[in-house]
Amino acid sequence: MEQTSTFPGILRHSSGSFTLNNAGFIVGGYGINNQVLSDVWKYDASNDSWTQLNDIPVALFGASFFVINDTAFMTNGWMSAAGNPNDSLYRYEELTDSWTSISITQELLHTLVQLLC
Image (cartoon, rainbow, N blue to C red; front, top):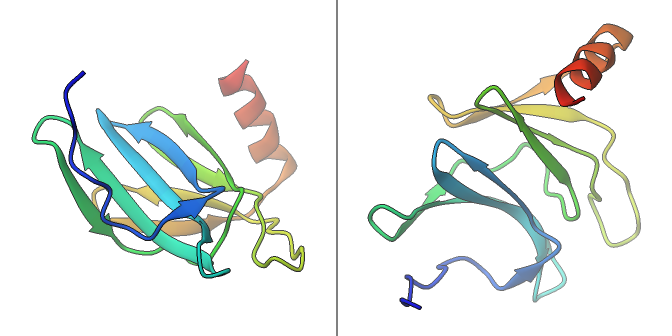
């Protein structure tokens, strides 16, 4: 197996990840210095390189990610080791490298269930 480039970010656990447009993303997590992280990293396998992107709006570990129609979403997770939960839903816009908070409505939940099932 061929060696890939070393991840340049802080050592972490409980980070989130997703794949979008043939690239892998690592998001947030819990750092080795007991810090909740907000950084976002993109791995491009075609040139074996890592790029640091804009941070997520709130530092999180243990968040959930899913992709629908080439759009990534982030929800849940914890904002601190004290157990402060995140109950927001965010959409990632790859073209602008930005995260947008989305209001969770019954209509949105119904649409997501239809797309995921």
